[in-house]
Length: 195
Ligand SMILES: [Zn+2]
Image: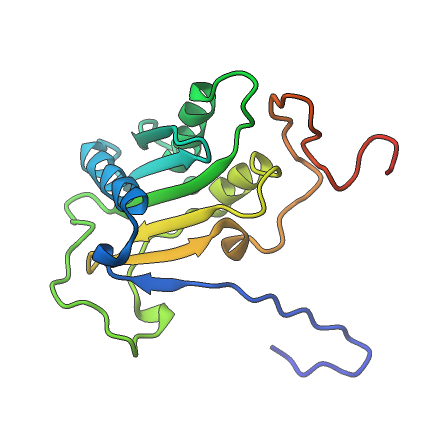
């Protein structure tokens, strides 16, 4: 980045990524990662095979693979689309976590036998990150929670644990999609009366 003169305000937002051994995840996280991997193996998509598992605050779960070729066929979006209708009327649709596993055709998601050690740099870790379109899609539909845990299975079988707001620190905020709430505003910060 170029050196800033004094009248330029620089914003530095921190993102958090953790490298976690599978065994150190809690049972719900393990279930989600395993379900995402299982779905990944079912994918018949030709360019990239992805599985995703979404879990809501009230314990509902949806696991899918990317079924439709092209930009709208992403598993992350399908998982949310299948999760929310399962949540009963009157219960707020809150996404708690999303696990993903992705690899190219002919490639195993877990393909390295030696785990990364504590000195590994984030850039050296092979893991699948949700694309920008999926991050926006998720952001637009999760305005009612502070953050969403994101788990991604890495090439060693370890897991990257991060969050939606870490992966998308500066979303488009003008397009919050209204969810069917039982009364509360989708965006509690600003209501119609400007309060
Ligand atoms: Zn995507």
